[in-house]
Length: 114
Length: 113
Image 1: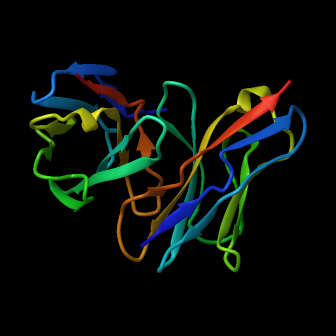
Image 2: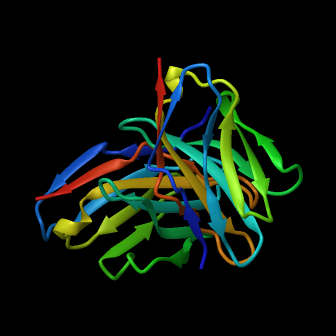
Image 3: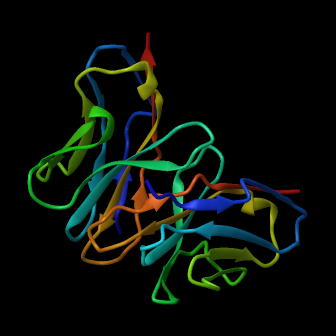
């Protein structure tokens, strides 16, 4: 069965510094990987995805993520954090060879300190 | 940009009552989903729906749950006899083709008293 691990409950970063939110996954088939962001009292907003091709994918709001097959990781990164990036971030995986559902990690709360 | 729309934003219901949560997916999307998020926990898959039938469901989606696409635009989740543990945020999602991400609505907060 597929699973997603986000090892950090919370990440604190000073504004202007680079940020990384970690994610590792487990699937039996080919992974489709996603990052979503959730602001207070809002739904899940799509940030970026990896389906195939370049391991470095770029998404909304300057975020990017690197797919690493050998380490089964898909860490979210941004070169320079903004206070407005503070939110709850979810990594998610779909086993493209098996089914349609997305499995989410437990989420990482990102605090950008002014 | 087109959005998934969910109503109501908050639903309060007595235990044992039936509740219907409403969703309007993005208009050209073909695949529809319901997820739930119990307060402080991860987002959990409930059910997926394609071509007017359920394509997959989780263990959570028992006989008390049902989904329906009554017309060309709405996608509803019904809970027949609600329990206290059904209290959660329920998210509807939709997508178009195979490689595209699911787009989520803002959710309905269901509170069972």
